[in-house]
Length: 304
Ligand SMILES: Nc1nc2c(ncn2[C@@H]2O[C@H](COP(=O)(O)OP(=O)(O)OP(=O)(O)O)[C@@H](O)[C@H]2O)c(=O)[nH]1
Ligand SMILES: [Mg+2]
Image 1: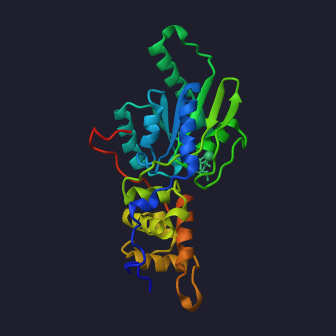
Image 2: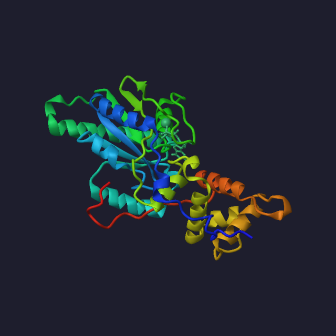
């Protein structure tokens, strides 16, 4: 019998447990600052499943007045109803933004067209004489780890110009990629905020794999995911794990998931470590249904 209420299991980690800031990130942030002058615009990649929490206040400060376009990627994994609400909120904030799935070529073309428009508008505002429609666009791609920065660049380049993996911290050095004579992109390593605001935000970021599993462990994010999909009553989740109802405790759900995924040890006991891995994998590939963590803030004080 599983008992996640035991004191030594299932307790959510302290928010400090989510802090992951390896040496290459401090360096990456320094290098982002150094390169700002050489680019026309910064393309900030976020995860559409956590539109606010996958941003980074430290990056915001670093950018100063540089033009920025926020691309909320992986929209194919996000709950469309919630995205509609977030769209309204982003519009109200008056910042350029776009929701996209980087594997759709047409969406990526829209991103570049929008980036050009933002740059042209800024030039027009600052110095109308200097506007040159054909000027080369130099764009720096930044964001939290694993949000899809390198994938977006590869999609635009139409080749494997930079390494991609479902592993936060894949890119560790900056790399310029020339798309054509009019477009150059700078890939940068993902940078985490130095402090995660709450345990809940830490769990969201672990679930979407911005933080490596080795830092937090697999148990707490897996429990969070199961609770979330039970609560939203996701039909895909129910079907995937052959559940007969959503009215289950977390422990009952884990027992059923262990059976459905064949994670049974000798003597018929559930192999929880394997169950956690399955849940994380299934969630990250979208098998459990669409999701969106957090709701748009009501307070005007909370900014993008
Ligand atoms: N479903 C979906 N998966 C995506 C999308 N964009 C990227 N991915 C996946 O997200 C994972 C991370 O992609 P990367 O491009 O390596 O992410 P990154 O931001 O460069 O990561 P770091 O270099 O670690 O900072 C890969 O498994 C991609 O296939 C998207 O729009 N939809
Ligand atoms: Mg990368």
